[in-house]
Amino acid sequence: MLKVLLIILGIFLICFASFIYVLVHERRTLWAGMTFTASLFTFALLILISLMDLTDIYSKNHPWLISVFLLILILALAIIVGTVLVLIGMLIFNGIKIILKEGNHWTNYLSLGLGILFILILFIYPNFGHFYVNDWVTYVYAFILLTTLYFIYIMIMYTFTAWINLVNPKNTDLNYIVVLGAVLLNGSEVSPLLGARIKRGIEIMKKNPGSKLIMSGGQGNNESIPEGVAMAKFAEKLGVPKNKIIIEDKSKTTYENIMFSHKLMGPNSKFCLVTNSYHVYRALVLAKNQGFKCIGYGAKTKWYFTLNAFIREFIAYVVITKRLQASIVGIIFILCSLAAIIDNVL
Image 1 (cartoon, rainbow, N blue to C red):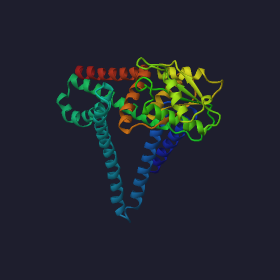
Image 2 (spheres, rainbow, N blue to C red; image 1 turned 45 degrees about the vertical axis):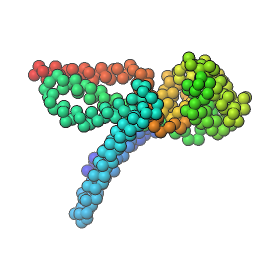
Image 3 (cartoon, rainbow, N blue to C red; image 1 turned 90 degrees about the vertical axis):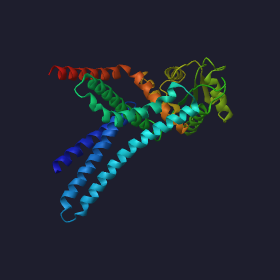
Image 4 (cartoon, rainbow, N blue to C red; image 1 turned 135 degrees about the horizontal axis):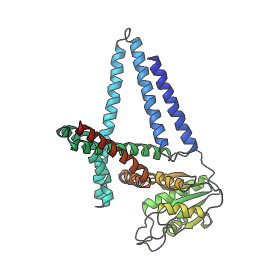
């Protein structure tokens, strides 16, 4: 048992050291989430094996320790199962609420759809999938299941990585705060969502003496003025001097927000991106793809909107990395096809 404990301890230290390395060198990658979850998993495993070892040593003189150990295991399983059930409930409840509040648009069905997908995978398919044993349909289901599990895993890693990138301790040497634009209300008014971004940007500017705000956003089809102009006016009403604001009014996408804003900066400038929390990580990935080093800050969003928007952002991330994702799905397809051919031949 001691050898196993030492092996797990070694794996944990490697995972944790890898996590620290990623944090220091480049945390805008899914390796941040992967090394973090690997560290958590191996640490939990280390605690579990330690408890098993202690229980084995002292259970003869203290038989009640076995009951305590079993209770801890049951509690851990209950937490895992409860977390899954709560997540499914949140997805479905949130999905219904956002449809009622935001309207009948396909993107508003993402949360509800994911909740239903979890129910199909965890409860319905395991009870009915046995009807298709030794049939080609089995391997079709296997491909769908494995592909879904892969994307769920990537989504979990994406979530942890996104959270990690929202934490920015002691960053008080920024030169520019880039506030990313969003659709204007009635063609010229700053929406509550965009207003939250601007207010967050002002907070960060105050913590970075000498920094300036870059209000980034072009003019949309249904907008009478560029988003950057409306954002600047909104910031001025909140007391920000004009000489502290730079307007970028040509961009149409997040990618262009970052690219055009960077052109307005001085050489070797340090900057951050400010947007809603669910949007920060994808923005950072786009900045990374352009070769820009920066950090991100998130603004508050209505709770019922956040989960659905986060799922939408994850889908956008998958699109950004479509070549990698297509390669992984292709490998899963090949493996399932080979298994089906071998099974039918034999």
